[in-house]
Each structure stands twice: as structure tokens, then as C-alpha cells.
View 1: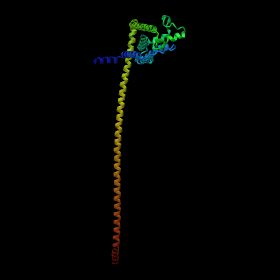
View 2: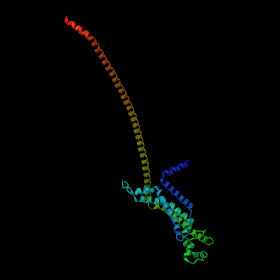
View 3: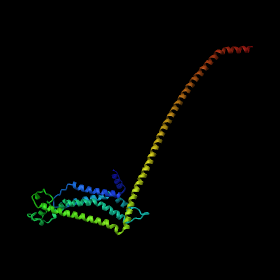
View 4: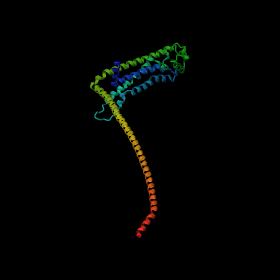
Length: 322
């Protein structure tokens, strides 16, 4: 478990190793796809070569583009090429070094596909079955005289279950001959690629060691610069998101407290208005009772005055007579 963790940390810290691993997995995937693919040659004069060469070279183009897409240094190379000139001037050797590195890794999966197709031989037999010389096999097409019939007969070589080839004993010899040619081309291509890789790997540092080390140094510098930029962006965005979240929570708390305070204020205003209304009603009732008492008192006084008015008049007359 510790070894696995150490290997994982190594690949995680080194983007070049990650790219190499992804390219290797893509090469293995190309082999698996080729083995799963159901190859069926059309066995027609006009379509055999197109089908065979298409199966041999069109999937490698797609694999090459996938190898460029998944390579991180491709984007870095474009960014280095299009960046504005600042304190660090542009060095064309760095861009060439990165471009060659990207192309070499992207060519792994297509090369594996072509090698597997050549060593298998089905595509080559389908593509070049109409191009062989029938004179090399005397008993193969002895009864066929016209050129069109001969081409139609040669196009049926990949189809062993066809009626024309079912009883022909020379078909296996022709098919074996074409497979041998295909395997010769495949092994020759593999040998050439190995020799070229050996020469490029061994002789490149010998021509200009300082330039080679400088380009390698700046390539690693650009890789580390990109990593530090991404880490800094992640930290800044995390801090900014944390601050925004804190501000959101504080504003929510302030809004809740203001709502509670407004509810309490409205409740107090409502209770105050109710108490004032009660006081007003009590005052009005007391004023009404006071007015009624005053009027009754006035009426009683007037009645008393009326009763006592003859006595007072008689006393006044007596006083005047005296």
C-alpha cells in the first residue's frame, strides 16, 4: 500500500510522467479496439483498397488527435507561443522542444495501431489482393482470360467462404504471401522506429548540451509555473468564496434580527394603541357620568330655589315694611 501511494504521489507531482502513462494507456486501448473490431472485407474491386487502407490509417488519425488533446503540454506550448513579451523573452527553441515532445507522445498510439494492423495482415490482404501478379501462382487463375474477370476473381481472395474461393487450393498460398509481405513491412517499420528513437535519444544531447539543458529547464519551468498558477487560483477562489459565504450568513442574521425587531415594535405599537383607546373610552364614560351628575344637581338646585322663593319674598317684604 505504501509503495502504491509513493508511485501515485510521484505521478501526481510529475505531469510528464502522467502524460507518458496516459499515452501508454491510449496505446493499449488502440490494441484492444483493434482486436475487438470485426474486420469484414467487402471483396469488391473498387472498394477493397479503400476499405483496407481506411482501416489502417483513419483510426490512427483519430488516435493522434486524442493524444494531442490529452497532452497538457500542448496547451502550454500554445500559451507560450501566444503570450505577450514581458521580462522573459520568447525562446523559439523552447517551443520547438515542447512541440517535438507533444508530437512524439501523440504518435505512440497511432504507430501501435499501424504496427498491429501490419503484423495481423488482414488490412493488407484486403487492400492489395487485386494488385498481385497471377503468374507467380500458375494454378491460381489459369482458366480466366479477361482482365475484368481476373480483377473480380482476385478481389475475392480475402473472402474464403465465397463460392469462387471455396474450392480453390491456391487461395491460401496467395493469402499467406500477402500476409508475409504485410508482416515484413510491419517489422521493418518497427525496426526503423526503434533505431530513430535510439539515435534521437542518444545524439540529441551531444550536439549542443547547453541548449538542450536550457530548453529542458525552461520546459520544466513553464510546467511548474502553470501548476503554481492553478494552485494560487484555487486558494484565491476558496478564500473569496469563504468571504462571500460569511457575508451572506451575516446579512441573513441581520435581516432576521431586523424582522424580529420590527415585529416586536409593531406588537408594542399595537398594544399602545389599544391602551390609549381604552383610556379614551374610560375618559368619555367618566365625562358622560360627570355631565349627567352636573345636570341632575342643577335640576335639584332649581327645584329647591323654586320651593324656597315664596318664603324669601315674604321675608323681603317684611324687612321693607319695617
